[in-house]
Length: 420
Ligand code: LLP
Image (tube, rainbow, N blue to C red; front, side, top):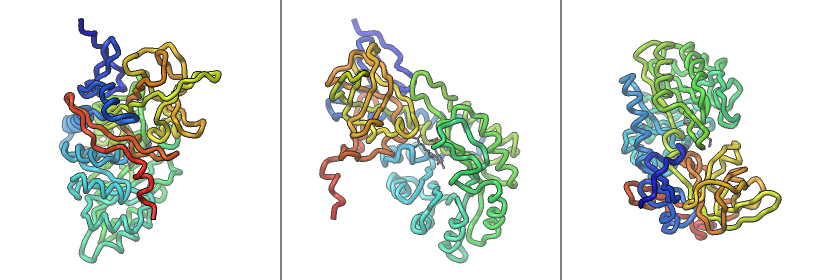
């Protein structure tokens, strides 16, 4: 008799299946087969999950307003193939600098739908963005204004937004809270009014709207209201760019707002506070990609030193989030789900802080087991590194039972390729 199908935790990609006998399927592909075919560690991306979340954002906006644009915050998964998928789905794109701009152009985004951010843009980045014809440069500071005015030729104009720090701090990790008054991002409310006046007077810059991004992994939406109110107080602008921030479920215990509730909250707040007919831009990153992806690892050793340590073949080189933000993930052994053994799931890197999950609960872990951690699609690949000479993991797209590598595994040769 076929094994009964269980529902995997909501941290897994949409459409994942878990049989009673532990068989795990992502995008219609068997997880153990994927580990065998592509090796570990590997990032497995369920393409249909990303498409579904993109469409949910677009539908949620379309249900409430005609004047909107969803921008993929490409830093969340700065991989050309993922960016190409977003372009295909009709999203615009936010880039954090010249490198992401290069990738966004390569991924096929229309330059006019790319928007350049950054609190320390170089002159070269501003020149490249303007020359490429980006939709907006998001001005962060006076130096941006000065430099862009120098770069734009007489008679030409560059559309811009201005990033405002609205003096609102959402409840999230301090490292990813960006809207308070004392922040490195944007103009705070004291600095905003004269800077806006200056840009409005410019014959090279077209100020089309104001921007906020108050933080990331936000699960309480309330702070968006005072942040929007702070923008509305700064003038009668046609366009509001509300940044990203929607939190996701990293484990079965997380209950973030739905995409629909998040969009409704923001759109309603703009309408109620600033009036109808405003064009609303939103820049989701994490909420589009986090749950699309699982990481597969292989257990290299299991030891008991007071606690049980289960060590895998990756770690802080492929997922820095537990170390930087104390982020909590869940894990299971592929083929042997469930728990029974309390352990620390640790990486292979040469420092004690390289712990992927403190107090994980695994089912009798053994060397050679394949471990899966869901919800690794956001800021995992983007912040990956080669610490200890660890080659970076490949990215594998899965859909309808097919799997294809879109970023190959890094090689030892790659580690020395820049040597001169
Ligand atoms: N817009 C701007 C201007 C941003 O700076 C960010 C993220 C976003 C949009 C997208 O935010 P999201 O929807 O993903 O929350 N490395 C950290 C996250 C840093 C977020 C930086 N800015 C992490 O792994 O949690």
